[in-house]
Length: 625
Image 1 (cartoon, rainbow, N blue to C red):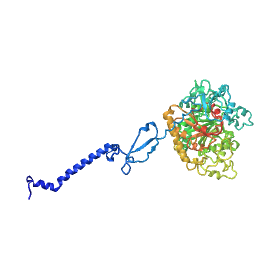
Image 2: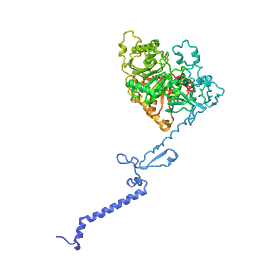
Image 3: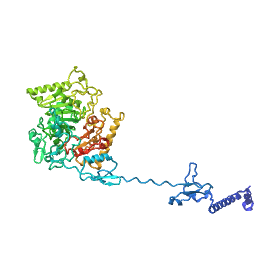
């Protein structure tokens, strides 16, 4: 039975139970510990860890949850002076540790010293500093190029040179080509009946060009392409003889202060376009701009054939000797058509085997059958397997005794070369070269001309005499199996594997890497330097490699053509260049180049001077072009 609290029995029972005692005791103990802990933490140098005021400063913690710097304080005052500072430990009596501040920053790199003939703004300067050099070479150079105002004052360990500018050549040398105009050599030639006078005969050492060729009087900035295809300034090529001799054949005519080019030729007086239409209609497989990409125009005149091929996506190379029509190549170059001074005479031409998809000779004044057909054999070497030879000449259509005999000799010779007469129509005959050696091997023993020996290198042609033998075609089909244009430009051709370079498996990677490299470089030229505004037309690449620079110009749609030069000092990559659908030539840069002055709008020489090991006087070349 419940007892009432008011009677006092309830209070007594609650105290007896102990609950009332436990609650106040717990409260008093808690207050006491808090007071004592706070007092000892604030008044002692040995603070309690869990009441340290520094515990609120975001301590770093180890994987175990406790900071490695717990119980430590640091005196940071020495940091400003850069001196060593002590580590003070506040909870342990351990030896003091000394920490070394980080070492001083490395010294700044030395200031770049600019040496050379360009100042910091990229302008030519006459005063320039020379770094390390060969004193003997400088002395020899000074003796060979001594001038009145060359002074070499010492300035510390450096030498200052003032180079005198080249004097101007006589006005009569305005069209001078050193290796083609060597009059002293030509006068003393023992024989010239095979055209030897039209080949290269470079001056002897010490007798080279040492003056700057002047432009003709009244020279103007060339008319840009494509207008230049139809007209050029008379003052830039002031030679009226060709207009007087060939005006009636629609080659060239003079109108006021310009030369006009109607587009005709000796065998196509009505124009090159209808003539090209006729050829393609005769043999549709020629397919200009698709199957036929690279063409050689032999004895080109003013290069109207090549000029109109360009509009059909064909890259022509027009060649002719510096003969009685001595300025025909100069007219071609002024028009902006790919052209070179070259002649079928006694040496191989500076082009590789299987270079051209089509070769064209329209009244080119070459006796193809002389000396057992050695000139046509040279044409066969350069013609691609399955390529076409187009001959437009009087023996094709005239029925005179002498001309009929020439036609018979030509058909016999082409038959011995295993060429097939594909079509004969009007004054045009078209032959096709075989794709392989099966026809050559099936001929009777003793058939002339014979096959060249297997050790003959058809791509060895720099100063190599003509050979009266047929060049063998590669058994693996290299050269014959090129892709159509434009696919052939970007894909590594099979003949890449035959190039003599120190690589085998990685050749295709090298090819693609060069293409990517020049694509990025030219992209920068176009975006930053605005090359597309320069109106570049004639371009020379002095060290072409695989032709990556030219391919990049094509990809960026710059309306120019490039002559790719492969130096004789390096691997012969010309077969790859031609298989890509580009044109080029081999050359030794120790000798002058075979072109007229003022030929190129741009000369590209990336990596040339650092690679050429010979001590060459490049100035001979530069003063001429």
